[in-house]
Image (cartoon, rainbow, N blue to C red; front, side):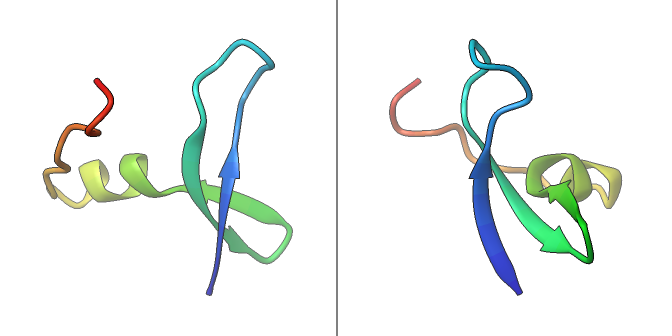
Length: 44
């Protein structure tokens, strides 16, 4: 598993993703799809 930080646009906040094949999967979106809660980032 390879973790990456990515942005959808230059202005967007950084997001945590996992490389799957040639795609990046958004970790938070994947967790939400499976009913998992994520803590708020310490900087928010």
